[in-house]
Image (cartoon, rainbow, N blue to C red; front, side):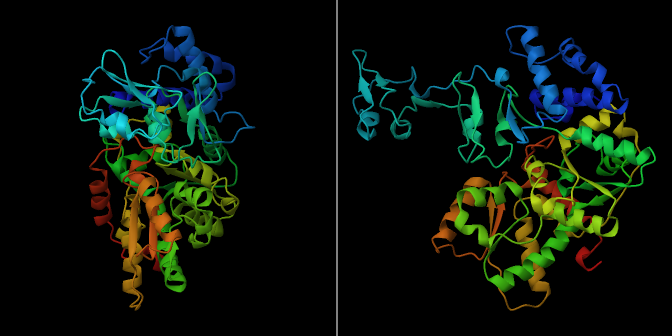
Length: 471
């Protein structure tokens, strides 16, 4: 199958090619002596590029390789900028286009609070950049839509305003604000922002387990996997995961069932709660609404809960989370997750691992797992967690009335948290999802199809387990 058909765009494809080459060499213990050849090999084929020359492309590919093998050990930030790959983005802010008719109304001039707009001899509007405060009122007022905001895609996609320009107009990330959601990485059309990878750690774990070391390696698969890998069935993808060398596969949705049972009781006890399942949302609360930190659920995320369950039974086991989320790479480094989750890879990285071993997923037999309930599986899409918590309270026959609000994306999270911090939110449970659509919209997904939520509902409907928290 054509590799490009597996992804949304060619930036993902290029990233995949680097990851695949790194993994291919790592399986064969040939990475160290061949690592410098990877950029040459990739650039000699058909590589999407807008660069001035192949030599610059190779230099950028070298930086991509560094992040694919884990990046600088002194810089553990998950989302990073490849400076030399960041170029050609319009950065002028609000500008008047040729659509301006020089009209009589001059509404743009009237609404500007700092007097930054004037009219020249051509009667066209002009913006004085030394005065402009980028408020956008002029653009909203113009009846011709003649004023555009030329912003970087990364900057526009970052809803926590963590992206700015460096001295050479390259993107800069303010890590005091960054929540590692990866929206900037997915939206950057040059692939200049990307997430560091831990695939080498995963390969080492698998090789160790299959090379005589006394431990098992568990693939903890997020329920959003059901919306990915459009070219094959989920059961075939699970078989491919087994063929990679994982000892066993477990559904993180089972961890979601356990979280549901515990979180619903916590909500009853406290009367008001915010979810703890989305690490980017948790980080957002901690950084932007510190007064609300006390209301974050004390439960680990489903990933952490599954890791804890496995390690409780097998302390020597290795656990690898496979999912759609770049923020999970930050979460597993948190103190409360130490010793529970050993590594995290995204669906993009899983695809690279599968292809690095030349596994043709479409030809594989089926592997089915049925470890979680309908409600555990719908955690993958926006609103699923709220439904699950409400159902758990109802099933217990409690008199407590859950009144949740499902926040779809950081902007909705901000509104709910702001109202809650002022005591005017009519809801008693905030489900916070940083990505639009929920986990199915994560930056590490292969695709971001509008039908992904329906695919999750269909997958959840196939569950035969009524309540895995009771297992």
